[in-house]
Length: 68
Image (cartoon, rainbow, N blue to C red; front, side, top):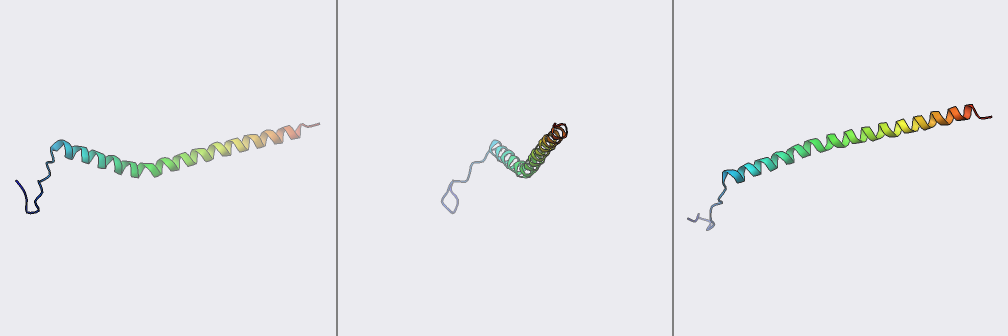
């Protein structure tokens, strides 16, 4: 059975629609969660770098204080 455009109607089953909805939901969640994950990673990296800088700085200062 053809439509006026001469093409067959798309045969979309319930499974195909479910897969499309799941893919769209995953894409939506990825778009929402990706900036949040990137922000958390940036904050964690900054905290680690700041902690390393402060510990190396205090160790350097304490060793300078005891230098003879």
